[in-house]
Image (cartoon, rainbow, N blue to C red; front, side, top):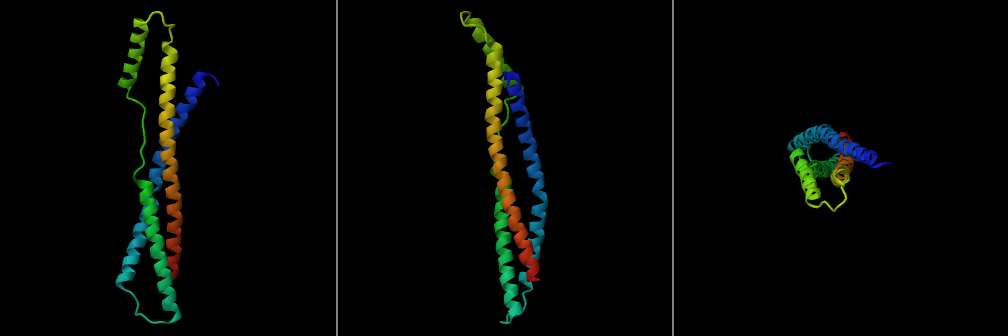
Length: 166
């Protein structure tokens, strides 16, 4: 793979991870909506609890209701973890990139004994920028995706237990 192909590869991966970030953020909407509905149902049931008795169905109701509430609480924790505290990094602004390019030109102008390598140095700068930011963004997206996946599992558990407790 020649240097330009490698740069193009990292550039595509960088933009893929930015798109993946947006996709992950969008996919949080439905689970959060479901959690809000379930939390509303739990609050309704808490306000209208059945009369306490020791028959089998009351015990089953309370057991599944409590398990559903626990699942809901854990789901909320993981969805919050998926939503917040993920840092992303971005390429420098065009003016910062141009300033670096001008600094390279000035360096080679002031050091005529150094073999010219502006294009190679600039290419390496871009390569390093894409790699550095791609690494950070991939890690953030993987973490966000993992929390979302676990949170969805707990949402499903809450749905099952709360549906059974009805």
